[in-house]
Length: 112
Image 1: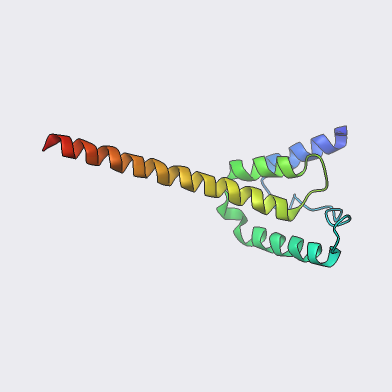
Image 2: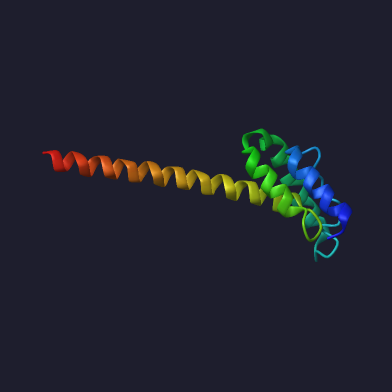
């Protein structure tokens, strides 16, 4: 990774701003169907714009850092990343609540 790319990625990761993040247009260069690829990128960008404030700042920072490292940046990859992190957190939180309920119910049963 070049020095400029690394500092750019770090700056983007710290900003949490979708406006600061941008796909360089090189994402679809090697795609067999460039028109479909660009359509997917546009849809992902629109979805990110709509929901950006709903994603956790730590998730945005982590995902921007990941998708800007290595190859061309992609809105599709960024959207996938923030959604996966959000969904994983929701599953963990749901599982934690379920295990709390199980523990509470078993304590209640023992008291009887």
